Each structure stands twice: as C-alpha cells, then as structure tokens.
Amino acid sequence: MPEKLSFRRATTGDWEDVDIDRVGDTVIPAGEYLKGRQVELLDGTPLREHRVMSRIYRSEGYGRIDNEILAGRRLHELAGSGYPPELACLYGDYDDKVTVTDPFTLFEAYRGEPLRRVVGLLTALCWLASAGLAHRSVNPDTVLWDGEQVQLTDFSDATVFGASRTPSSGRKGWIAREQRPGATYGTVGPGDDMWAAARLIYYVRAQGEELHNREELTQVGLADLLDGVFGRPEERPDAGELLRRMGRPDTVPRHQENVRLWEEQRRFLAARDHKHPGAPVPRELAEPLADPGPERSMPQGSAGTPPTGTGVPPAMPVPNAPTAYPEIPGQAEDATRETGWSWGRRRRGDR
Image 1 (tube, rainbow, N blue to C red):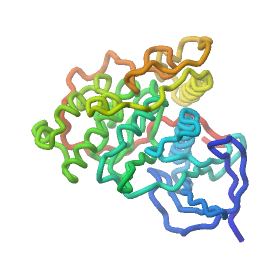
Image 2: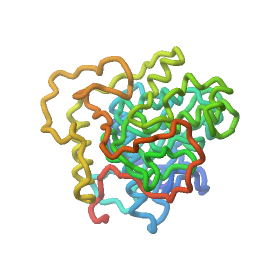
Image 3: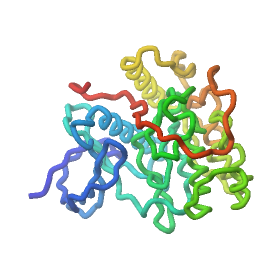
Image 4: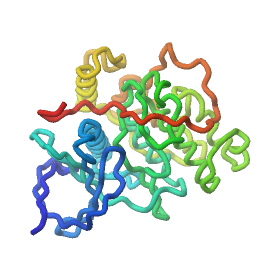
C-alpha cells in the first residue's frame, strides 16, 4: 500500500493529502540534527523529505525544521512564480496549525553533487539578501553543481537580518569568526555569508586548496574581486557588489515593503524573547509598525544594503565589536557545535 503524506503546499498554501512511493531507505544528508530520504509521488514527482534525526535531538531538530520552513516560505513569497534555480525549493511542509509529533519538510529534488565550481553562487546569495535572510552555512557540501547550474541548499541554520548573532553549526573551517563560539557579536546582516562564500570562490578557483594568505588570492587572480570580504562583517561587500566587480548585472528583484513580513519578524523576536529574556531587539523592529503605504520596489543598488524602511532591517554595528579583525582567514578553530536562533515558532506540547 502506498504511504500517505499530508502537508501544506508551499506555492499555494493549501493542505494536500498524497500517496508516495519510497525511492529507498537510504538516509541522505539533510543538515545537522536532520535526516533525509528520497521519495516519489505517485505521479512521478521526485522529492526529498527532511525529518528530525531522532527524539534525542528533538529540541534542536525542531528548530532546524522551523528554519527550513520559514526560509522556504519567505523565498516563495519574494519570488512568486519565478523561483530562482540557484536555491533549493521548498515543495511543502507539515501544517503548523495542528499538533504534529514528527514534523517534516519536502524539497524539490536537488540537482548535482557538492560544489566544485562557483557559478551562480553570488546570485543565490543576492536572492537570500533580498529576502532578508542569511544562510550561515555556505560550504562545499551545501552548494551543489550539476555541470550547468549552482544550487544553494540546507537552510537549517538560516536566520533573518537583524537577529542577534549566535554560533553557527556549519562545517569546520567555513564559519566566519563572528559566528564562532565565544566570538559572536552584533546582529546578522548581508555580510555574514560573504566570508564563507569568498573562501568557496577561492576553493573552486584553486581546485580544492584552502586559503591561507593574501598572496594566494593574487596568484589565482581573485585579489580585486574579493577585496574587503575578509574584514569586519558590517564592512564587507555583499554579493551584489561582487557581481558588479565582475561586470555582471544583479537582476534579483528587490524586496517590496510587506506588512506580513514585518509581522513575521516581530513574531520571531517575541518568541525568541520569551525563550531568551533580554535578548537585544534591532531598533528597526522595536518601533511601532507604520503603514507602509502603496507597495514599491526597493531602490536599485546593493542587494544586501537596503535603506531604512524598505522592509529588511540593515545590520547594526555594536559598541563591543572587535577592534581588530584579520582580513585574511587562517585555519578555523575546532568549534563546538551549537545551534543558532530558530525562528521561534513552536508546536503545542513541545519544549
């Protein structure tokens, strides 16, 4: 008998009950605390399903599932019918309005194998920045390449611009200094993903070699393109700026003012404050919500640096930021894995 699956469809918001055939019982990578499997609908649609690895990791895993759902829904709202192929695409998820003991996400089938070339990565990061999101786990395992197209996957550690930085649980050696245990400060912004993205660009150009010093950037012709990327996060060029340095247009649509997205961020911060009393709230979200008036597109320019009031709060410098920040990365410390902020959405009966 076919297995039954009920979920909320990402493109329509409608509740669906479908029959699926298992492709196999082999566990596939799905992000920390999560497990994945390949499934196929009876109509032949291939999907990948992510669930919490085990009840031992229920608390951490539920937070990662929340992150994937919120990132997927927000990107769908931004892109509409023109969802970018550079990003993994949420197909559906469990309905958070009902009690679910085994939450899950469904993604359209990933394309390709872990990245060995960087074509399209900057475009993917522009889409995230336009949606007000930081991925926080860019590395050769989460960026895929099928010979023609890049696809950024694994949103389980993603969070919104304006959230306080917490340690990333990404792959060792690919975590920016401001996201490592014991060194976090300030709020998340468009520069948070650029440190790892720059290392990945070098990694691909140097055919799998790690970056150690400035001379190595010059040797492979990347010194000008990556200038400033390894500095302080609030001063880094964003993905749109790197595209312009390459002479390529940034064609990602700018995030439009949307009251629902503001309210979503406020709900996230309220839930986080309930769990972590006293956590700082960005000033852009602490102000009373004003009527944005008629929707209008964000002014053209850097995808990651929208002006105040355009729907995506910019990153905020903080007084206790490090006074010295090395421009060229060294080998990363052996960081203890900790979870980042979840989106604050919890099911009844959990935690």
